[in-house]
Length: 320
Length: 282
Image (cartoon, rainbow over all chains, first blue to last red; front, top):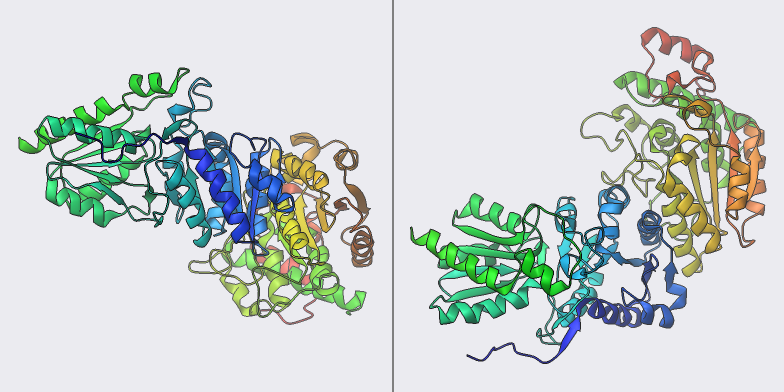
């Protein structure tokens, strides 16, 4: 069966962020950007070149960057900070907690190179705990888009939202299948396939793998429902519950630790409102290591085959 | 403009507020609050061009202040209320349940006059730089003031910010360090010596000024006016202001022991005896 979302267009999500930021710069004079010595990696160079007065290089000093961003909101600016996911969250947790989240500041924390697909740099840079860290902060919005177009749309959308946001994206090129004109709605899941046997909730890079898994499951006689949860917080509980009420079982898939990620959020919804079997495709309470992105996704159980197996297992548990 | 004598009278009332507030809930930080009373009274009553009502979070077109060492909230709250940001009677809710006057200042409960939560130390300078850059982008010629404890300078983020302020030529910022030489565990010299603070800030590219006695109102006012004359010259300005922790109450003065301890009934009476009630207690 031909993949409904097949595309030859492959791009990195971080470039979607860079393109979105540039467009925001043109649209909204209040948008400013700060970067901690990773302008090229974050694809912020176009914004820097076009709007030098609204771009602040802060050097390798992330704590100060978060504080400066919080201060820039006083005076009406909409600051976007850029660095790797590890340095955007774990390194500056207390600064985000006090100066941004508790202070209710309109800061957009934009984080690239999240998860294992950072690759060869290894575990020091592959944060797998960032979604958990950020979603525990009261009122923090947490977004993990799946491809270039969705990341670009998300970047533009979060400028319209008043309040702190964590936007997570990555390094490798992945299929860019989201329609370029698709509006990004914070907290609204995107339904990719309707199905009746199992609900697969995927986020970020795992969304494409869930699409691939859909076709393999189809051949095995399992009709999966595929839902892209780009916003982990606030979770689209209605979509989650409606789907599982139909299928009776679920799979979550994410490039993150099993503890504290999307799977945790879905488990909480299900146990509170509609208990059902849930299988989690995620890193199993471990750090990453060096390797190519593909090798790592396979070794740590985040591949298409892992989603297929999880779905079969979930269906089996439901049928018991 | 108030006279020095009027400012001193106000400071006396603020000091009464401080000891009464911490006594009422048997918690809070009187030492640093008393030491910085003269500075905050001078800043809010004489130096800053600001509009208490209606309070604007953005602070466009006004001078803004950030308290980085948030634990001295008693003096901040007293000065804010007595400058018209909120009713003076609200001081009796300090540190109590459902109060806007949290243990450490926050924007979370909507208290007018507070633009940033502080308490976890070392974050205020970064925030002030951001606010100062926003003023620059907005074509706003007003200034940004901050206050820090000297112990607080042990936080690494302060020096990240110090570097960035000079690099971005943030010359609409006046940071003041309360050099009282004390922190919770004892004298800064024993806990973690700060070394040559003047030399350190100068090496980071700041204009360094000093106030020799931060508990002398005339000196504080002149020192702040002098600092303003150094703004707009391509570099950030820092004032190293020597104070006595606990200033104004003899048995609290010059010791770290009153950093975070409230007076008992007897000690309160003793303290109030030394502080003239000039504007009426809350």
